[in-house]
Length: 135
Image 1: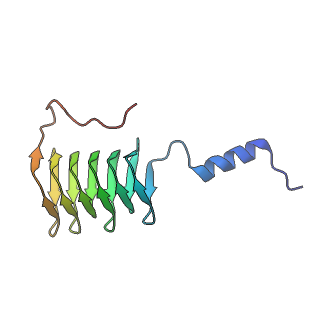
Image 2 (image 1 turned 60 degrees about the vertical axis):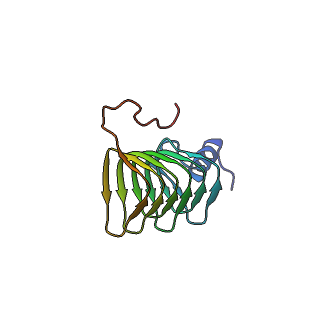
Image 3 (image 1 turned 90 degrees about the vertical axis):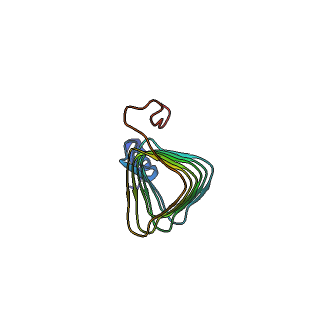
């Protein structure tokens, strides 16, 4: 009467744990990670990370804090970062506070956004372009 077939249990568990081909991953405001974070997809961080972050694209919430190096193809920063950033496209929101060196191809800094560190422009064809997540 209440039994489920094996296939329905399998599909239910994949929904509960997350699909294999998600467009992004989310770390909520209640999450604190002590260690490096790597994502093959876009990453939205509202919590705290004490470690390096590597992802395709990063969106950081205003209340978020990252203490470590950030490497992403694109990054939209609204919170606090204590560490360096390497990205092709960087958007610094008005609430952002970055303490560290920034390497970028394009950058936009909103009124109120703060960067305390060295800004280094990288040409798209320069050797040593971004190395993202290991295959």
